[in-house]
Length: 518
Image (cartoon, rainbow, N blue to C red; front, top):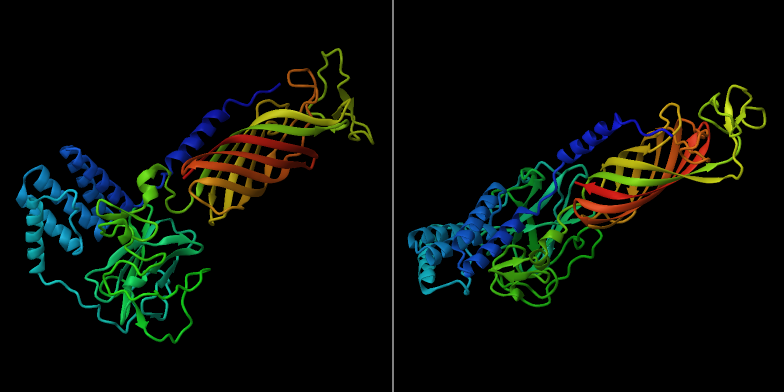
């Protein structure tokens, strides 16, 4: 019996630790975090936990500033700070300044009736009067003959009918590490741009601007792509020079649509600008927009603390499926190998001279094993599969959403002698057979190759008997099925068929283990 060389253990542990330390788990979108912090803060405020509420709101303000979160979520943060200053700390002057900042961030932000008092309402009215005395740009952007600035290709729709959702699609390169893609749009009569999160879909990110905001003469928008570090990594247009989509009463081009979807239908009823929704999925206020009741929000959102929020994110934020599926993975597992043994297979060594019974070794002979008397074969009474235990490691990266490349290692707990007698180092390519997701079921098929040996002992480990050896080359294929419990951790099982060459040996590995993903 030969135990795995202990010198490999520090190296393996160090590699695993380096991989884990070099990767960081993806965090929820900053916009959703700001919304959640506001909800928690106002719950603390209603429970008279003033210091806790103030800490949470200051965290929300800092997070919004660092991650360029604007519009309704930022305005709600300032508005709640104003309510806290007046209602919780009796500081009307500070509260007035917070209300002014809130209205400048989003002029449509409203007080929550549940937290309003006559004094708070008076300060809010004073803030609105002061902001109202400052000139506010309400005119539509001036159309420009030059294309909007951008550092990523983007094709806008040529036109759209009035009161019909406007499809916006941005193709993002597969290698681009994206945290979120934000769309800022403005329709006729809107005081400011509205920010929404574009949804991940095949090939990129898409969103349909609700029909309630689509009126002649045009819709204006720009897009910002935020990377995993929180910085803007790509953009299309800006507030001064946005993308312009003409809104018409008669269409001169085919109806536009998002990839793989049917063209959106025109609203069945008349909706003047400012009225939430036109009846139908996708209408109503978007994520993070101001609301007074759930009916003001889109069909899949709820109204909480004056903002439209994702109800699933509010109830179970730890299970929320945020953004794209993890790209980096580390698989660790215990393996039960089954190698096929038959008489005449090559032995790892010559028989020790001190053994009285050397019947397990057979000298090489033509037609039996090898035409070389110095090489020995293994005597096997009954051919069949021989079990052996090992450990498997795979570390890889999805270069495309469904295609990954990985380095692998198979380390046997015991073996005979010879080059890489207890180890196979290799590489493989694997393809995801189900849609990649942050959590849930995973199923990949893979093919690969390696260098090293798989050895089996038909007489059982610990007996003074030879080991059957294999060639140093191998080709393999199989599948791995798993379940990702949270974004960064899951369980998995795999089956792999291994063909060792040029000295042939067939082996099947069944592995159970865990998966760390980033």
